[in-house]
Length: 447
Image (cartoon, rainbow, N blue to C red; front, side, top):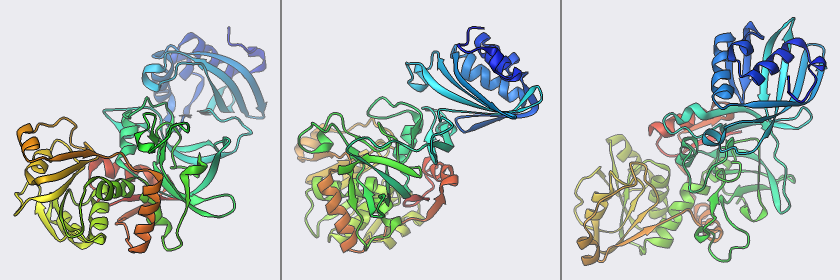
């Protein structure tokens, strides 16, 4: 057996399991477990031999996995081994190099009673976290994992934040689907925005946009720009590390819950409204949608800034909520407006785009930041140039806008609509609500 470690130094069931992996023998591997054994691979549990055999076939055999044991230790009925695994993992996980894993065994006689597999060494500090194990376009929630991960190291120029609360976003669903501006490397902790404490107890909010430190100018124009939880591990964990420049002190006037949702939706809405729309106080604006995170932020920010806020909603319940949050008037989805508006804010894309074009007045501006209903749209270019319509895209915002937005929210005592708050252990329920489109406002995970 060419495993890189003498089988004589391993308990018999462990040695048999390593040999089965070497042989890519799923039946043989399952036979090393007891009848009611449990295998946990990156937080997903497999109960009983048939389920464990299916895991071996999918995780190892189908990926032509190879394994080499580098270290092992046994204390009574518990054994752990450090292995280097290789195989054809690029397509599913973006992994191109051999990687280290730890197998933690609990033995019972000649069988394995419990096996946990992860990348955490026995002496490493751990934390609770929620992450995407891989990109799954068809069934994104199947990739959600909620378990322990190692506490992240702090690179030079970065700081560690003890997370207090995290706002969930549709961006988390895109991550679970494997979609992003950049190639994603899994596993990837979710959470694009959050609030917490520095080691000295200072309450801070995370500015979520990052880029190349050598880039000069607006970070949102950096070709390498990304948000927390895209190329870096996200905030949906007990601890997160971010660059020092991505931390701002939380105003005392803001609660932790309020501050936790400002990083993505409210920052995006702030740039859409104040940086891209060209609106002046008193002018009419239309928000396409009434209860999504960015839509709610636009309604609240627009009302506070003195705009006349109109919005659409698919149900009377959603339209009523929009009015409660500050909308002056609401309309059914696609309903013709009594008059044209100076700016339209479109977060949906395909379903609402034609209505956005029809609703904008001469010289007005359509600001877009999403494509939840589809990214391919058709429009009459004659109307665009004849009516001199401006179409502007928005990608979050820069640090200066973030600081101004936080101050604006504090000054105007804006309270984001947060109908549900989940503990970290139930974060998947919040993600499920966002995917299904049943949430009105923001979902927060509180640690």
